[in-house]
Image (cartoon, rainbow, N blue to C red):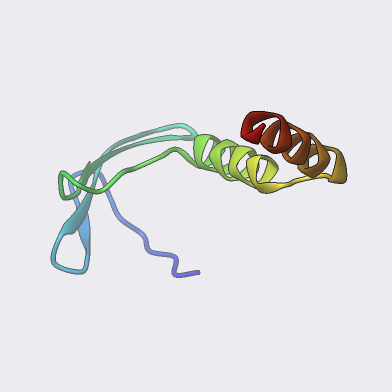
Length: 78
């Protein structure tokens, strides 16, 4: 992990398309401004982790799920 020190009003760039600016620091809270391309999605870490977990759960299958699908498919084809 790269750790940088920035003061309010200072920025850093990630490649050519992403700019992060420190707007203010108050106690334990830092206010950031992030310029990203319109087609790039930005998530807070806790939201991103929840999305990853939900996607992981959605991809899990059990034998019961496969048997249920098989039964439905057989019923539908009759």
